[in-house]
Image 1 (cartoon, rainbow, N blue to C red):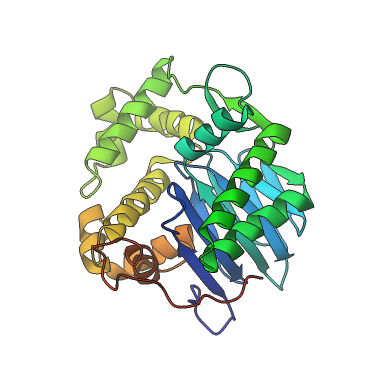
Image 2 (cartoon, rainbow, N blue to C red):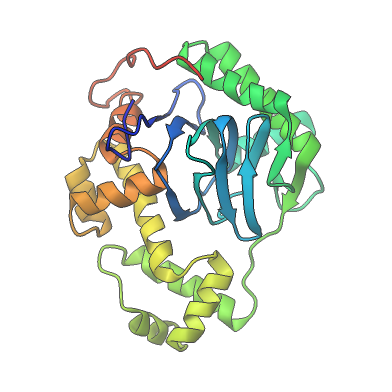
Length: 300
């Protein structure tokens, strides 16, 4: 376990992947001072607080997650999080891919409607049983019990889909502002290591800087520079998973140096890049330190 914020706060976190559960990342942590900066995920976030209060900032407002609740965040929804009290918060979170959730929805008949990707129509619900199932996935995975972990994962997601599921609307930019924002996003993705200025970016997509700022924030919930940092961290995760060192990764994605990567990565992912690389690379057959990881901290 690592103390992502440092300073002897008693914080700890484990962000890892259990090889028997493809399409899923797991995070179990206790945070006090740590703050997640605004970001989004390309998959789903399903979190169950087991102690304290987590304050989650979403486009529609702020929610307070307490023990017995489950937070469900759909893909590409920008959000940030921090402690809702001086004691911080402890939680277990699942990050299933879109493909995994869609497969479970199809397999269990919990897909709502016929168009769009299965998702969730509510952000926070009072559902102690679902929260316990999420904790159970972590306990089973940490114990190396693949049968239990896979079973509990599917039961948890099927329950949440059946009770709170919906269909996510397809993102099809129609008006000129949305098209400009989408083109700007693609350019930033392509030139991540050496991005243009806002004025240059606006010129390339054929609009003005302030018009682009408004359009981009409307389309993606954050301004271009914040989105770019988030995108850099996403790419850094893939490079670290493939064995890249933090220093190599920082240069490849456009951070000034490794300390800049460390700071932004930890604020978004919840653990430092070195810890992330150790946990994720160890589950790759060709990864450094391959084999079975050491025993984790008992589940909270």
